[in-house]
Image (cartoon, rainbow, N blue to C red; front, side):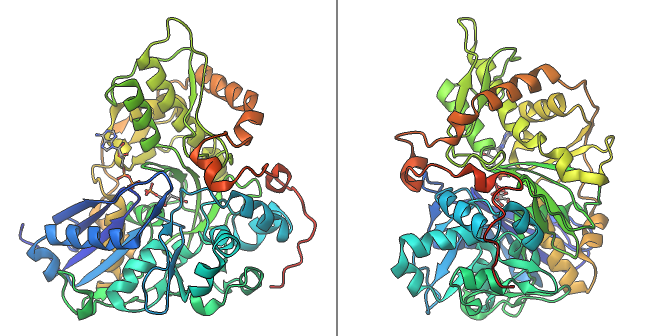
Length: 508
Ligand SMILES: Nc1ncnc2c1ncn2[C@@H]1O[C@H](COP(=O)(O)OP(=O)(O)O)[C@@H](O)[C@H]1O
Ligand SMILES: O=C(CO)[C@@H](O)[C@H](O)COP(=O)(O)O
């Protein structure tokens, strides 16, 4: 272990594919030890939360003595999802993850119940998507009422892990803003929405306030950590990365992981009634307008595997279009969609098809970029490219070509875990965690100049997306999505901007 200049803290990122733990020197931001352990990924997008705990244990063990010397820890995790616990704190069923779209019919009914997309955007900052916790809870009450009845506590993934460290039920404003039942700082949970869902607020965790901690590590946690070490609030992974980058308004981030996300920090609360941009809170006292796709690195890796090609084995694609919606899609909101390949010719090569998959994944994100930045846009600001995909040349070059903007790839690779570490350091030292991260200079890294935007490719993609609209809105017979959601015909009116505004009479 390198010699530390300040107290040590731990930042954790419990994401979809793995858990990463970093032990960080608060004085310099240097990572003195790290560990990583995988989670199983399944077609159903359910997971036993015990896998997260085992992966956390393994990642901390890999950090060795440094983990036991750390004075504070914070856990960031994949957003949304639904973790249901019984009265003893044990899961009553596997957790439903953010990329599970089975609650698409419940999104339609809930959207209608509150008065349509605009009413949701005004009330909780976001139009719900199947990723959100509120429609997932409604799915559970409608489809597994006995499981719902046995539920004594509801948690988000990071709350679950934090709770096992501290023995307390806590969450933070950033992750709470992805539930669909958090009204904003002053109001806390929206009791009208909770009533409508038949959900007792006592089942929900306390939202930790700014500068406050979640508790301390209890001996019973049984991890290689110091008993009594401070535990910070934690947050959702995207809020964690924003914090880890010390992000300022006007600079867009594109994160390439299992999900693709595009976001910026903002001083004003977003309320996008088209549902493209979620009005999340950040991990401090600002906002994090964000658009998220369900199909990013895993989907493109899947296409590469089908083609029998390496990730980087791409060729310029002038013809084919691939919309890689393997898991249904959230941006654009097409939960019943599956992947679509269009424009094949005799001379189309495998490398072109793979490049088309990259193009399709990046295009879906870039379509949302202007909406995310709104009036805080700075067209010359580089896109900060993060997440596992940022290590790949094909990803980086696709983003440059389709955005026409400069791209900067931070040298620091685990920005979610670094953000969590900054949160832990902020709690330990009594300082602003965003300032801590800026002092660590985490956003620095090589810059790549803007190249002319490939408008032809964008037009081909837009043409395929609009032309196939009807097909993409229908469940694909025989796919896992159809089996999970049933064959209900989606009610597109409820999801259209300014759609059904009737019936919005929920109590506040
Ligand atoms: N060198 C690389 N080049 C391109 N992609 C990579 C590389 N290394 C990892 N990845 C991609 O990173 C993804 C994992 O990214 P990560 O941000 O850790 O995901 P998550 O946060 O969803 O668990 C993998 O699906 C893989 O495709
Ligand atoms: O649902 C969202 C954002 O709203 C996703 O970004 C999840 O938070 C999962 O992130 P990764 O595990 O892919 O990083």
